[in-house]
Image 1 (cartoon, rainbow, N blue to C red):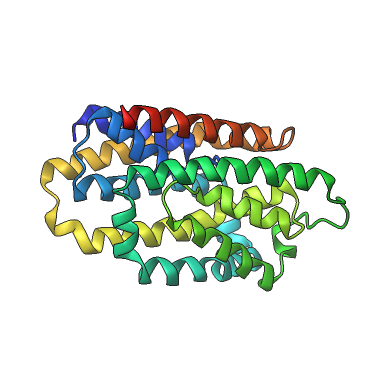
Image 2: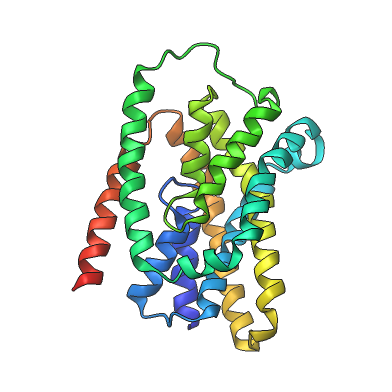
Length: 258
Protein backbone atom coordinates (compact mmCIF):
# COMPACT_ATOMS: atom_id res chain seq x y z
CA UNK A 1 0.00 0.00 0.00
CA UNK A 2 1.32 3.44 -0.96
CA UNK A 3 0.83 6.94 0.47
CA UNK A 4 -1.47 7.67 -2.49
CA UNK A 5 -3.63 4.66 -1.61
CA UNK A 6 -3.76 5.78 2.02
CA UNK A 7 -4.83 9.28 1.00
CA UNK A 8 -7.66 8.05 -1.25
CA UNK A 9 -8.87 5.51 1.29
CA UNK A 10 -8.72 8.15 4.04
CA UNK A 11 -11.01 10.37 1.97
CA UNK A 12 -13.39 7.47 1.33
CA UNK A 13 -13.47 6.66 5.05
CA UNK A 14 -14.06 10.27 6.11
CA UNK A 15 -17.00 10.66 3.73
CA UNK A 16 -18.69 7.32 4.39
CA UNK A 17 -18.12 6.67 8.11
CA UNK A 18 -21.29 8.34 9.39
CA UNK A 19 -23.53 7.56 6.43
CA UNK A 20 -25.68 4.38 6.43
CA UNK A 21 -23.74 2.95 3.49
CA UNK A 22 -20.90 1.06 5.26
CA UNK A 23 -17.50 2.70 5.36
CA UNK A 24 -15.84 -0.71 5.82
CA UNK A 25 -17.57 -2.02 2.71
CA UNK A 26 -16.47 1.00 0.70
CA UNK A 27 -12.90 0.71 1.95
CA UNK A 28 -12.73 -2.96 0.97
CA UNK A 29 -14.14 -2.33 -2.50
CA UNK A 30 -12.06 0.82 -3.02
CA UNK A 31 -8.92 -1.08 -2.03
CA UNK A 32 -9.84 -3.82 -4.48
CA UNK A 33 -10.26 -1.42 -7.37
CA UNK A 34 -7.10 0.53 -6.47
CA UNK A 35 -5.15 -2.71 -6.64
CA UNK A 36 -4.16 -2.66 -2.97
CA UNK A 37 -2.78 -6.12 -2.02
CA UNK A 38 -5.26 -8.15 0.02
CA UNK A 39 -2.93 -8.79 2.95
CA UNK A 40 -3.41 -8.62 6.71
CA UNK A 41 -2.07 -5.06 6.89
CA UNK A 42 -4.75 -3.82 4.47
CA UNK A 43 -7.48 -5.27 6.71
CA UNK A 44 -5.90 -3.65 9.78
CA UNK A 45 -5.60 -0.36 7.88
CA UNK A 46 -9.34 -0.41 7.11
CA UNK A 47 -10.12 -0.83 10.81
CA UNK A 48 -7.58 1.61 12.25
CA UNK A 49 -8.28 4.62 10.00
CA UNK A 50 -11.94 4.47 11.02
CA UNK A 51 -10.81 5.69 14.42
CA UNK A 52 -9.45 8.81 12.72
CA UNK A 53 -12.92 9.63 11.43
CA UNK A 54 -14.48 8.79 14.79
CA UNK A 55 -12.18 11.22 16.63
CA UNK A 56 -13.98 14.04 14.81
CA UNK A 57 -16.93 13.17 17.05
CA UNK A 58 -14.78 13.78 20.13
CA UNK A 59 -13.82 17.20 18.78
CA UNK A 60 -17.41 18.21 17.99
CA UNK A 61 -19.11 16.61 21.03
CA UNK A 62 -16.41 17.04 23.68
CA UNK A 63 -18.91 18.56 26.13
CA UNK A 64 -20.88 15.30 26.22
CA UNK A 65 -17.76 13.27 27.05
CA UNK A 66 -16.70 15.68 29.79
CA UNK A 67 -20.02 16.71 31.33
CA UNK A 68 -22.98 14.54 30.33
CA UNK A 69 -22.44 11.47 32.50
CA UNK A 70 -26.02 10.24 32.08
CA UNK A 71 -25.55 9.99 28.31
CA UNK A 72 -22.14 8.36 28.78
CA UNK A 73 -23.71 5.61 30.88
CA UNK A 74 -26.23 4.89 28.11
CA UNK A 75 -23.39 4.76 25.57
CA UNK A 76 -21.46 2.34 27.79
CA UNK A 77 -24.46 0.00 27.98
CA UNK A 78 -24.96 0.16 24.21
CA UNK A 79 -21.28 -0.64 23.68
CA UNK A 80 -21.39 -3.92 25.63
CA UNK A 81 -23.00 -6.21 22.99
CA UNK A 82 -20.59 -5.17 20.25
CA UNK A 83 -17.62 -5.48 22.60
CA UNK A 84 -18.53 -9.04 23.53
CA UNK A 85 -19.44 -10.16 20.01
CA UNK A 86 -16.50 -8.37 18.39
CA UNK A 87 -14.01 -9.96 20.78
CA UNK A 88 -15.53 -13.42 20.42
CA UNK A 89 -15.71 -13.30 16.62
CA UNK A 90 -12.53 -11.31 15.87
CA UNK A 91 -10.97 -13.97 13.61
CA UNK A 92 -14.25 -14.57 11.77
CA UNK A 93 -14.69 -10.83 11.17
CA UNK A 94 -11.18 -10.53 9.72
CA UNK A 95 -11.93 -13.43 7.38
CA UNK A 96 -15.20 -11.84 6.26
CA UNK A 97 -13.31 -8.63 5.46
CA UNK A 98 -11.44 -10.61 2.82
CA UNK A 99 -14.64 -11.55 0.98
CA UNK A 100 -15.74 -9.05 -1.67
CA UNK A 101 -19.00 -10.90 -2.20
CA UNK A 102 -19.98 -10.66 1.47
CA UNK A 103 -19.63 -6.89 1.13
CA UNK A 104 -21.61 -6.77 -2.14
CA UNK A 105 -24.49 -8.80 -0.77
CA UNK A 106 -24.54 -6.85 2.51
CA UNK A 107 -24.67 -3.56 0.60
CA UNK A 108 -27.43 -4.83 -1.69
CA UNK A 109 -29.65 -6.40 0.96
CA UNK A 110 -29.00 -3.49 3.33
CA UNK A 111 -30.24 -1.10 0.64
CA UNK A 112 -33.48 -3.04 0.23
CA UNK A 113 -33.97 -3.14 4.01
CA UNK A 114 -33.29 0.59 4.32
CA UNK A 115 -35.84 1.48 1.64
CA UNK A 116 -38.42 -0.93 3.08
CA UNK A 117 -37.86 0.38 6.58
CA UNK A 118 -38.36 4.01 5.52
CA UNK A 119 -41.64 3.09 3.80
CA UNK A 120 -42.82 1.39 6.99
CA UNK A 121 -41.59 4.23 9.18
CA UNK A 122 -43.57 6.85 7.21
CA UNK A 123 -46.78 5.02 8.12
CA UNK A 124 -45.87 4.68 11.78
CA UNK A 125 -47.50 7.23 14.14
CA UNK A 126 -44.83 9.78 15.14
CA UNK A 127 -45.94 10.46 18.72
CA UNK A 128 -44.12 10.48 22.06
CA UNK A 129 -40.74 10.16 20.38
CA UNK A 130 -37.61 10.27 22.54
CA UNK A 131 -35.90 13.56 21.73
CA UNK A 132 -32.87 13.52 24.02
CA UNK A 133 -30.07 11.00 24.50
CA UNK A 134 -30.40 11.17 28.29
CA UNK A 135 -34.04 10.03 27.94
CA UNK A 136 -33.05 6.77 26.21
CA UNK A 137 -33.65 3.90 28.65
CA UNK A 138 -30.90 1.44 29.53
CA UNK A 139 -32.98 -1.31 27.91
CA UNK A 140 -33.20 0.61 24.65
CA UNK A 141 -29.51 1.48 24.83
CA UNK A 142 -28.68 -2.23 25.08
CA UNK A 143 -31.00 -3.04 22.17
CA UNK A 144 -29.33 -0.36 20.05
CA UNK A 145 -26.03 -2.03 20.89
CA UNK A 146 -27.42 -5.34 19.63
CA UNK A 147 -28.41 -3.66 16.37
CA UNK A 148 -24.90 -2.23 16.08
CA UNK A 149 -23.35 -5.66 16.56
CA UNK A 150 -24.92 -6.80 13.26
CA UNK A 151 -22.42 -4.49 11.59
CA UNK A 152 -19.54 -6.84 12.40
CA UNK A 153 -20.49 -8.17 8.95
CA UNK A 154 -18.61 -5.90 6.51
CA UNK A 155 -20.99 -4.00 4.27
CA UNK A 156 -23.85 -3.81 6.77
CA UNK A 157 -23.06 -0.29 8.10
CA UNK A 158 -22.64 0.38 11.80
CA UNK A 159 -24.42 3.73 11.62
CA UNK A 160 -27.22 2.31 9.46
CA UNK A 161 -27.88 -0.55 11.89
CA UNK A 162 -27.93 1.68 14.97
CA UNK A 163 -30.09 4.36 13.33
CA UNK A 164 -32.68 1.85 12.11
CA UNK A 165 -32.67 0.25 15.54
CA UNK A 166 -33.16 3.58 17.29
CA UNK A 167 -35.95 4.71 14.95
CA UNK A 168 -37.80 1.42 15.46
CA UNK A 169 -37.56 2.00 19.24
CA UNK A 170 -39.25 5.40 19.00
CA UNK A 171 -36.22 7.69 19.09
CA UNK A 172 -36.17 10.86 17.00
CA UNK A 173 -34.03 10.68 13.89
CA UNK A 174 -31.60 13.45 14.85
CA UNK A 175 -31.25 12.04 18.38
CA UNK A 176 -30.41 8.51 17.28
CA UNK A 177 -28.00 9.85 14.66
CA UNK A 178 -26.10 11.74 17.36
CA UNK A 179 -26.24 8.69 19.67
CA UNK A 180 -24.79 6.63 16.82
CA UNK A 181 -21.94 9.15 16.49
CA UNK A 182 -21.15 8.95 20.20
CA UNK A 183 -21.44 5.15 20.33
CA UNK A 184 -18.88 4.93 17.53
CA UNK A 185 -16.17 6.33 19.81
CA UNK A 186 -15.82 3.41 22.28
CA UNK A 187 -16.66 0.93 19.53
CA UNK A 188 -13.88 1.99 17.19
CA UNK A 189 -11.40 2.67 20.01
CA UNK A 190 -11.88 -0.94 21.12
CA UNK A 191 -11.72 -2.33 17.57
CA UNK A 192 -8.57 -0.36 16.78
CA UNK A 193 -6.92 -1.17 20.09
CA UNK A 194 -7.61 -4.89 19.68
CA UNK A 195 -6.28 -4.95 16.12
CA UNK A 196 -3.11 -3.02 17.00
CA UNK A 197 -2.51 -5.30 19.99
CA UNK A 198 -2.75 -8.39 17.81
CA UNK A 199 -0.85 -7.10 14.76
CA UNK A 200 1.49 -4.21 15.65
CA UNK A 201 4.54 -6.48 15.69
CA UNK A 202 4.03 -7.27 12.00
CA UNK A 203 3.86 -3.61 10.88
CA UNK A 204 6.95 -2.06 9.30
CA UNK A 205 8.07 1.54 9.84
CA UNK A 206 6.78 2.45 6.37
CA UNK A 207 3.41 0.90 7.13
CA UNK A 208 3.07 3.03 10.27
CA UNK A 209 3.66 6.05 8.03
CA UNK A 210 0.94 4.90 5.62
CA UNK A 211 -1.41 4.37 8.56
CA UNK A 212 -0.73 7.91 9.78
CA UNK A 213 -1.64 9.42 6.40
CA UNK A 214 -4.91 7.47 6.21
CA UNK A 215 -5.72 8.24 9.85
CA UNK A 216 -5.19 12.00 9.58
CA UNK A 217 -6.96 12.25 6.22
CA UNK A 218 -10.04 10.43 7.47
CA UNK A 219 -10.16 12.70 10.55
CA UNK A 220 -10.02 15.94 8.54
CA UNK A 221 -12.59 14.80 5.95
CA UNK A 222 -14.98 13.42 8.58
CA UNK A 223 -14.77 16.68 10.53
CA UNK A 224 -16.04 18.50 7.45
CA UNK A 225 -18.75 15.93 6.64
CA UNK A 226 -20.34 15.22 10.01
CA UNK A 227 -22.25 18.51 10.29
CA UNK A 228 -23.43 18.18 6.69
CA UNK A 229 -24.96 14.81 7.59
CA UNK A 230 -26.73 16.27 10.63
CA UNK A 231 -28.19 18.95 8.37
CA UNK A 232 -29.31 16.27 5.90
CA UNK A 233 -31.22 14.17 8.46
CA UNK A 234 -33.16 17.22 9.61
CA UNK A 235 -34.76 17.43 6.15
CA UNK A 236 -34.66 13.99 4.51
CA UNK A 237 -35.04 10.28 5.22
CA UNK A 238 -32.54 7.56 4.18
CA UNK A 239 -34.32 6.22 1.09
CA UNK A 240 -31.70 7.79 -1.18
CA UNK A 241 -28.96 5.96 0.72
CA UNK A 242 -30.83 2.69 0.21
CA UNK A 243 -30.99 3.31 -3.55
CA UNK A 244 -27.29 4.21 -3.57
CA UNK A 245 -26.40 0.98 -1.74
CA UNK A 246 -28.23 -1.10 -4.31
CA UNK A 247 -26.64 0.71 -7.25
CA UNK A 248 -23.09 0.54 -5.84
CA UNK A 249 -23.58 -3.15 -5.03
CA UNK A 250 -24.68 -3.89 -8.61
CA UNK A 251 -21.76 -1.88 -10.01
CA UNK A 252 -19.29 -3.62 -7.70
CA UNK A 253 -20.70 -7.05 -8.60
CA UNK A 254 -20.37 -6.26 -12.32
CA UNK A 255 -16.76 -5.08 -11.96
CA UNK A 256 -15.80 -8.01 -9.75
CA UNK A 257 -17.39 -10.53 -12.08
CA UNK A 258 -15.80 -9.13 -15.20
